[in-house]
Length: 190
Ligand SMILES: [Ca+2]
Image 1: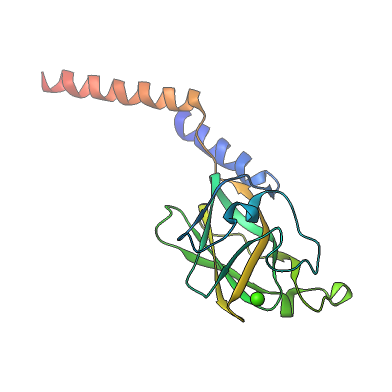
Image 2: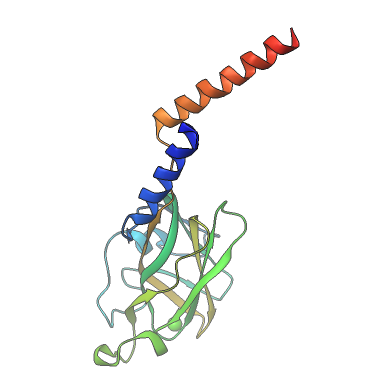
C-alpha cells in the first residue's frame, strides 16, 4: 500500500468513526419570494409546541414552494429535529450538488408527535432518525406535499457524520506527486 493510499484509508476510517453530531447550516434559500421569513427555519430559535404557524417560523401557502438549506460541507445524514405546522406533510430531500434531490424522509405532526406532548394546533417539534444516507449531502430541501396549504417550518437541525475532506498537507502532497508524474512524462517524451 502506497503512502498516499494509506493516508486516504486512515482519513476515511477516522471520518467514519466520528459520532454523528448536529451539522452547521450556512444558508437558507427559498424557491421564490413566496416564503415569508425563510431564515427563521434555521435561526436557532425553536418555537414551543402549540406556537401559531406564522409565529417564529418560515411560512408559505400552497405546495409548490421549497426551502433549501446549505450545509458547511458534505455529511452522511442520519437524524433530524423538525419543528413544523402539525397538520401538514413535509418531504425532506437531499442533494450533493444543489440540483438533483433525493428524498430523505417525510414528517407530519399527525403521526410523529409523541402522544404525551400532543397539541391541538400550531407547531410541533419532531425528532427523526433514519438509516445513514449512502451519499454525503451538502444540500437539504423541504417541501409541503399535503395538508391544508398553510405551511410552516419553525426550525430544522440535522445530524450526520462529516465526509472526509483531504487535509491541506495531503493536497500539497498530491500536487507534488502529480507534478513529479508530469515531470517524468515530459522527460520520457523528450
Ligand atoms: Ca398547516
